[in-house]
Image (tube, rainbow, N blue to C red; front, side, top):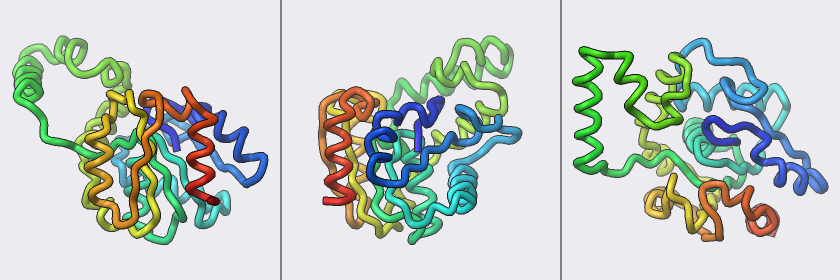
Length: 217
């Protein structure tokens, strides 16, 4: 389950390795990759229900899951909604925890809102991340729904085994976010490895060995 603005191709090293021994299903979330574009703004729950419908259509039952970044949001939400849908869950570069934001963040938000009242086009072009500015209008609305939802309460409802694999150099979803998630899972643990936010693609052999040990060891 891939990250935001990514696709199933991000996991090609994992697909190639695990498909030698197991059935592997890799999907593009709606709005990404080869899937259809969004026609309305999706929340994390919308993505979770869409994913459930797709996997049921493909007759994927009780699977192990590898999820990255945004895909972790979807995996956590779906697992909270349907506790028995997944078996073991591996989250890497896990997004979904909204930590307390600093003074500078709140200043930027207030400045953006003020400028948007008088110069909305200027505000849209010059505020927010490059990722946000690259999105279509409907994707921007979806993005705002997604990034502002803290999923720790969903994580507390999960009873599956969860492994968090954290790249030591990940600055997009840093270790403190993984630790905040870890505190919520009933059956969770954290493993560190080399690499950044895409550690699974940077060091696929090391990542695949960690995943295989977790799922089948």
